[in-house]
Image (cartoon, rainbow, N blue to C red; front, side):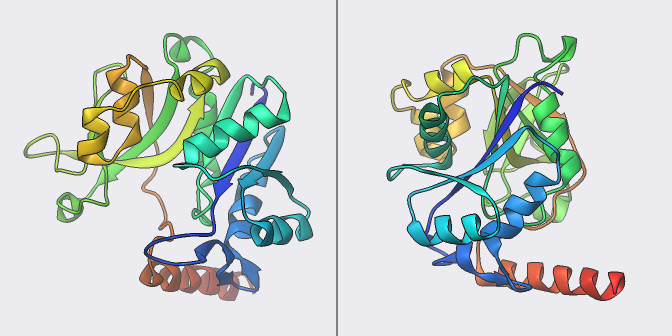
Length: 243
């Protein structure tokens, strides 16, 4: 695989679950669990980007690399600042949210590799999608995506699109070409982005070509206290089985 820099943006504040990055998961902070999963993918370099000293401390204590950033409006902006601070030129920058302690290694590799080779030509960004059960299509937190026949993203929405299905849920792992990542910060405010509260719509409005690869349905991320309990139960079950 090409040279991949994986960046995990992590912030202390969270509206629905304060301090979730430091929540205990089987004896380790959540952000450290996510870092460990990304490390397992075998990329050239993995860093956690944060503006919080305690998050930085627990990651470093686990042996991880940290880049300190300023306050950022979203994860993409924090990743962009971290890459600029490092002064390196990878082929691909992978953005993995810090609240994904169960993210599949196969998904990380699929997204990171989606910009390479002939199939990646003509695309600026890559991300992933999975089959979404009809029962979950109306949930606004389950972002839906539609693509053309070549896998190019046409639209992302919190509403059930396309009308009548079948539906695909967006899996929020991104791969960027470094030059495109820098350019994203120069775009003016987007009406579609504001209406759906989805930054990737602003990219589409500005002509960014997003490739969407199909992956297996994702394990739960951690957005609420209920999510945290679910992840703890999954990890506990896995530990019992392996023991």
